Length: 175
Image 1 (spheres, rainbow, N blue to C red):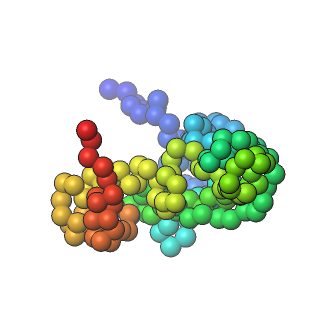
Image 2 (image 1 turned 120 degrees about the vertical axis):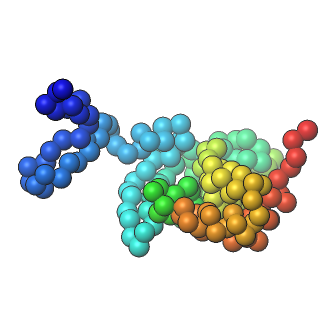
Image 3 (image 1 turned 180 degrees about the horizontal axis):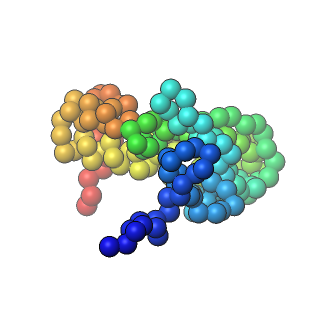
């Protein structure tokens, strides 16, 4: 038998903290590598009162008008959008997304301003990520809305039974 059977693991002993092991994370240019394909740039992550707050902005320099398809770099205003995501170890996750509104430069377009859309992770006008909505819908289909609400609140996704029913009614059956 080896003297140190787990010597190839990523945990190391930290001399400053006594004998408590710490996990060594792979070296990277920043935490934004977690969501490379999303087009989001994570600025900061904080934890308070059992909730993880993730502060992010778009990494794309220009916006595309969803009505006419023209690109614009002229920013009209900014606002913060709160989006709930799946929990981390039972703790709620809220993404505070800094969203820009742009002027549409197309004279044929009926809209003068538009808000940028945060990639494919969030549907327009929604306050939850797609994967969070999928988890809520799956629990709502498999159990009653009351049971799903209780179960989801235990794993860090607080949602009412009425919201689960509303989400299920919004779903379209596959053809």
